[in-house]
Amino acid sequence: MRMSDLAGTGTDVATGRASTPPAVAPSQARKWLLLDSKLLDGERILLIFEKRWLAEARRAYPGTVIYFPLEVEELKRVKEFPETIKFLHRIKKEFGAWIVPSNRPSAGR
Image (cartoon, rainbow, N blue to C red):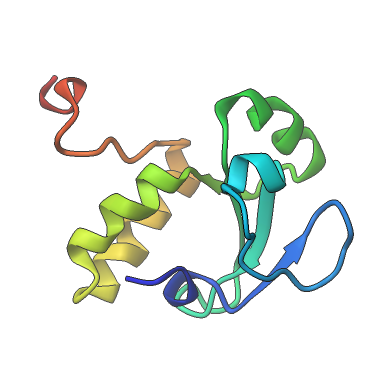
């Protein structure tokens, strides 16, 4: 799964312009990206690069479903099943859930 599979367009929150892939690590370039997802019928999602920006992002975009890069990486495991990705998104949205990477020790708890 490429980021473009989840996102149709991105907006650099700092500038409000269409985003392009950063030349440096995402966490050094910006706090988050606001994305319009093709897969999720144009629904807007937030991709946050570091946990320290979570509270600020929630205040800035209340009700928007938030993803971290590790969650997107985990969704790559089911990229052939768009309905599964939509289902996982609904769970995140309805319950405020997080996708825990399957190789993390806490995933089995």
